[in-house]
Length: 115
Image 1: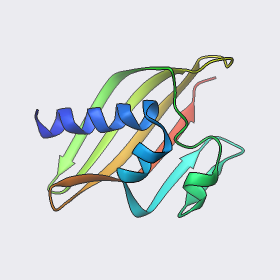
Image 2 (image 1 turned 30 degrees about the horizontal axis):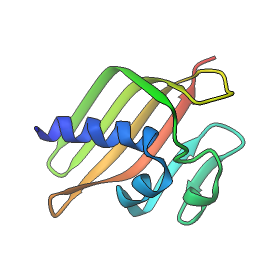
Image 3 (image 1 turned 45 degrees about the horizontal axis):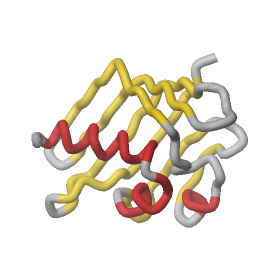
C-alpha cells in the first residue's frame, strides 16, 4: 500500500470506525473545525462532542486531492455520509496529517457542509 493509499484509508476509517479509532490516529493538540454548534474543538473536547468521530454507516468520498511536503500531507475531498435516522450529510473536508516516526497522525480536520 502506498503512503497515499494509507492516508485515504485512515481518512475513511475516521468516518466509519468511531471515536476510539479516530483517537489513535489523531495527534495530541489536534484541532477540528466542525459545523455549528460544535465549532472549533481541541484537546479533550474532540472526544466529548457528540458530532465528532461518530460512526457513519456509509461514506463516499469523491473529488480527492492530496498534497504532500516532506512529513506533512493535506487531504481535501467531498464527502457524502449516512447514518441511521439522519439525512445524508454532504460536506467539503480537509484533513492535515503529520508523519511522526513512520505513523501518520491527524493534526487538523475541517468540514464545510454543502447546503
